[in-house]
Image 1: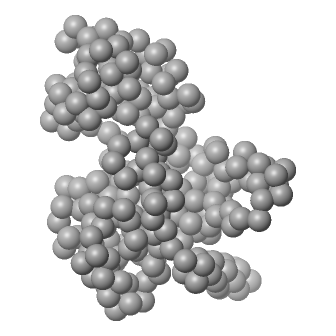
Image 2: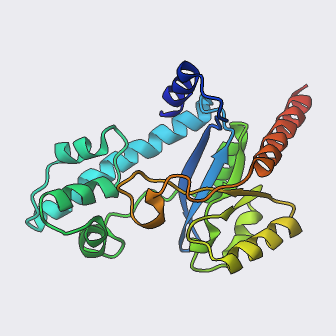
Image 3: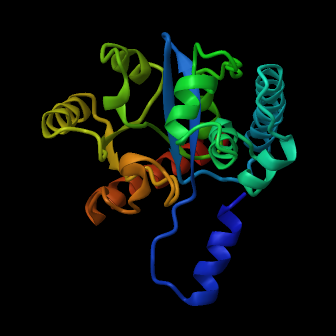
Length: 244
């Protein structure tokens, strides 16, 4: 929902910056949380938007269930407070954690997850199981390029090969929490498997924890961006020829 306002702002201000519409999808498989990035997507694609709407509605229901569990434990927070923290209609656990911190139940968002709403904690509610292969399929159908985000955060590095086999077309090699050794290994893997190389800071706002509160702390040079763009253009041209 933020892409159109961002594009309008760019045009109104006459900013000479590249605008790349994208998305990050949280998926789950092989006992791990796997994040899939989609670059140069058609964010008005009907199938993509309908699927995202369904996921968003489930997150809304999940947040209410978590709050109900917290209430049963004697922790008084209101759903309206969580909606205010979210500043929109996309509600997640970090917003619940924020309210818990504001009301003095915990000292930090990290503690909220560790004590109450993290996996295995008393107020945890499992999220909808969205598979990486569906994310890859949706991104490709919307004309985008699917990329495996921050592979260094995966506990079992062996599943990277499995994810590549699902149709991933690139790896987020450059990431704040990747070591130099990991970066070199992912570069080798990308070249061996003919995959695109991307990077980013994974900025989650100035109140994010760790590296994710530093906008632009990690990225890639213009050459890798051009490779990504040219790959996307070539893929779209191929799809158009196939349709004809």
